[in-house]
View 1 (cartoon, helix red, strand yellow):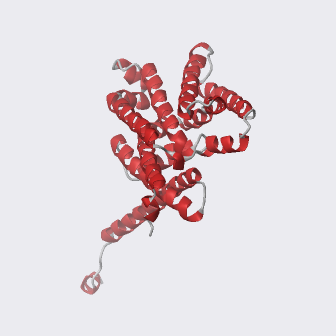
View 2 (cartoon, rainbow, N blue to C red; view 1 turned 90 degrees about the vertical axis):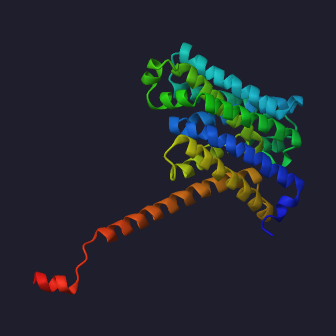
View 3 (cartoon, rainbow, N blue to C red; view 1 turned 90 degrees about the horizontal axis):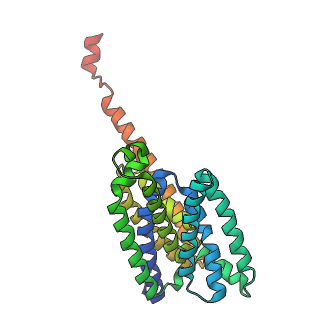
Length: 292
């Protein structure tokens, strides 16, 4: 009975598409957490709004609008850093507010404002089509290629950009490529959880995985599994409780992260307790008598 909803074609497509998104986010989200780029993910999620709104008004494919808007914002961040002499966070903050404002202004001219805004902010994973699955599969392939090709450069730049420079790994170029990877993950997640909740899939599964892994590839794999589990749980919650699918998936991801932290804490306490008991000296009656 628990998996009965998956007999419906649209639910199966939603699970497949959500799983592809979860793997992409597991790959990109690992670097987001390692590099402390959560604000960038949030800003890119909202930065897609003008493109999506414009595509909605003009009748263009929403994914195309989301991708175009996110790419523009990513490029603008780099320009403001290099030529505007602004810090990374300041550049992101200015563009974040500017793009969000532009998106709201465009959407406000749409006749179906409420429906459009809800879909943009929270996604519509149940509407994923076979064509969307093909696009997500290509996006996943590209994400894997980027992660494998630039793994050494990402790692070096994350821990010491000066060493990366000495090794000829070009940290500035590496940063641009990493922003591109995060942009790819955010755009791919749009259909599943919308612009508002995308950071939930980027961060929560990785945070849950970090409790159990110490190596970046292992974190990516485990985060992807946590993400897929979040998608499955969110879809089932949405089916049986009648809640919004995107929000249910994001909530499930956060819940799994909290459960992972709790289980890890209990396991560590149990391990420490067992170790403490093994190291305690044992005193037999004979030993006590001899000592006396």
